[in-house]
Image (cartoon, rainbow, N blue to C red; front, side, top):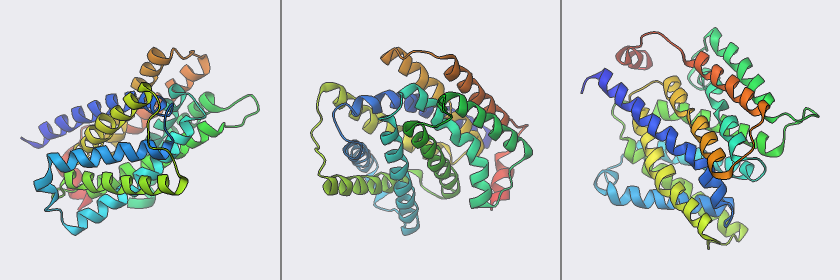
Length: 298
């Protein structure tokens, strides 16, 4: 398969990831009806690690130490981000969070600037201001204060933006995305398990809705989608990946309205539109050669 076909296939895979993650906002809210955030994450990442280990045992047993370390680092960061997101979801709606979490698209160029020393283009600053305006419309109240849930959703956006940059850096030409994913899941599950023991959280789901949410999060949202993200980012740019993945906000908003019948407000719709405009501005580009991009990175 040539480079352009690999890029198109990777972008399609990332679109599937965005659809699955869009449903994850509703699934997370469902899971919270019967379990604590730490217990949900323990189930989620343990299931993903188990499925990954069973399906790809031969590849995982040959994982080099360097990939193990990178996977563990991504897993620890993933765990921190998911805790912030799930706790924040307790204090805001799934529809609002689906928009606020996509602020990572405006943050990725600046995170790349700090981590990878890649100076953002002028359009990144314009997109950042537009995204900030959109976030303000969605989350600011009459007293110009940001609610706890909305603030934590923005914190998740910053952590997930950092994860996107690091995954793009780690999944080089010779890296095995499945090996990286397994140690990402394993590390996150160990941290979540330790948190449950320390807090004394119950591990028995209460109600069928919570159980359904956990199964969705563990199998689709984590094992399928996160592994898909790692595979897809191997063949496309960080900014392109962040654009496609950010479509989860539209799917998440749609699923939330359909499932929870959440009320639509003009501020949320206008803010979401501004965030989407910022995404388009920030990632719009001319023709792009994957081969040239990889040469610049090496």
